[in-house]
Figure 1 (cartoon, one colour):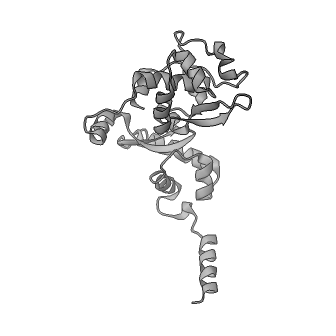
Figure 2 (cartoon, rainbow, N blue to C red):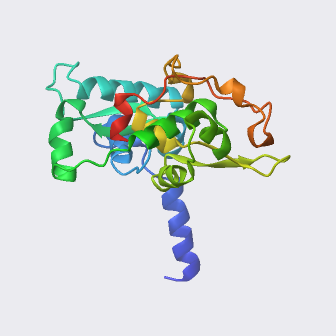
Figure 3 (tube, rainbow, N blue to C red):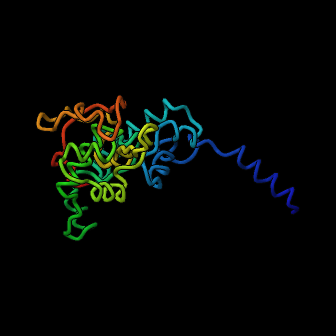
Length: 226
């Protein structure tokens, strides 16, 4: 077989790929197959593109799978679930078995953030985009080392630079949303009254009139497993 003939066969097989709905298990099985290999939440739009089916069908299938794994369709509840987080869908172990999974993964050891890190990531989440100077002003201490830790863990990242001062702007990542179980920053709870009013920080680092994310509660106990 010549090279030209090989290329023709490859192109033809791609164009005549068997529709997922005609394969064993149909669309549900196809969605499960993709969810099992993704390393971050995948959107319904992306799934629809990969599977070559309408987005509305993918959305319906995702909700059906979620209900099935919860045992809402007459089947036994599964040890895993499908849920939306971080702007997409992904398979997660069931919260019911969090202690069991935790014992297996860390063998009894914890890898929680320090109180300083929790407070810092909370300020970034609710004030973003924000500079390190502004975060330091809220906490009253230098946060350079803590910001490096949060950046290393993938919870915060550089999102821009103030053109007037050159100060680096930071924001939370999709990984942060995923670990918090949030679809977007709009899902953050209302801000706690004990967190200083971040509006008073305009002008720190020379940064003013920066669009802010919805403000919400400072770090809660739920964030300690980040």
